[in-house]
Amino acid sequence: MKKGKILTKTVLFLDLRGASRLVGEDNLEKLAEIVRSLFEKARKELRDAEFRRYQGDEIMAVYSEAIPAVNDALRLRKECSKMLFEVGLDAGIGIHRDKGFFWDTMDKDIKIIRFGDVFNIAKRLEGASYGGDITISETVFHELDPEVRKHFAAKQSMKIKNWGKSLRTYVSVR
Image 1: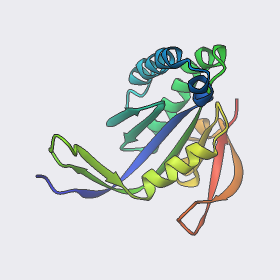
Image 2 (image 1 turned 90 degrees about the vertical axis):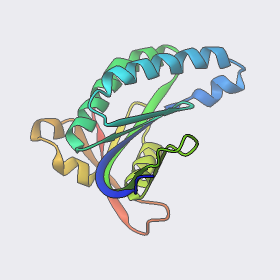
Image 3 (image 1 turned 180 degrees about the horizontal axis):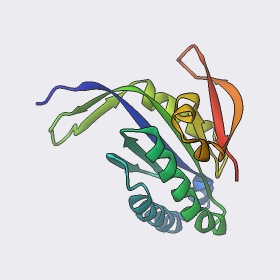
């Protein structure tokens, strides 16, 4: 078994908004088709990710750098927003760059172990995103080119659960 490593990475989380309504309306087949289409688009648009995980109606992607993650998120939002709008759904995206623990165990039951602030904060940013928004941390914002920064506006600082600190965030503008 290989040992894990602490690495600085950028993590993107995407989660559908409104999917639970479809489950409650017993539209599981419709939801499954929407999620399949979303995952196909994500496989194409999240092209710079080192690793992608698809689970339920959620996507997680890991990147070496912040800029490709933001560019991929902007492309994916553009590609998916019409499709999701037509069925009354939307997606929130959160992106953060920090240290995390990565371990490919090479075990068939426990394939990859990941944890750390990079995952927790990216997930919290996704949870704070309104449908259609991309919310990024200040760390990510400062790594962006000035041309890409124009796509984001400062949002209020948010207190991150179980972290004990506030984090300045930025949200995409359309």
